[in-house]
Image 1 (cartoon, one colour):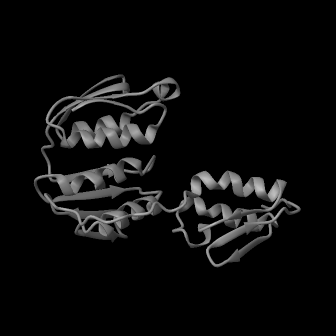
Image 2 (cartoon, one colour):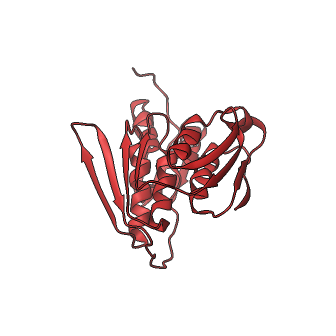
Length: 219
């Protein structure tokens, strides 16, 4: 329980809200500045459907979350964001019973796959499947699981490095160590964009070098 201040991070709001499922007392999710103007209707709706009591300012922060999860089947429409899906996945192994998660309209599947990969690295048992007909992504996790301790090195962040890749193409050569061997998710598409724009990209082992290039337009 207690207060969780997320600053201006929408990701933090969604993850912290879902983590409240594990608390035995009221959790208050706070933020500041720009995040106070954002609606978290999807998050509030999900928590309410799970049996939690949520008080908010018309789906704006602060969120006051209390209660206990009352279902073993969770459905999420992920057409807007996959962040809350990742949050739920991180919570499921700690719930008292096996839970089935059904995700509809998943647009950012690579981020969910990254979350599942981390869970598996820590030894959590995960069963996943895709229903092509109903266009759903299903995951089952047993409750009360225990992890295997390990040292995990966080891979490079494609979202953060994308700006520097573009800056290198415009302003001068830059070397990016370990990036060539980093797991690729949705934002790694920046490499394809740069190639279409005529940017010279060199790879040496795990190092990517972006050369200052003459940028050309493309459709």
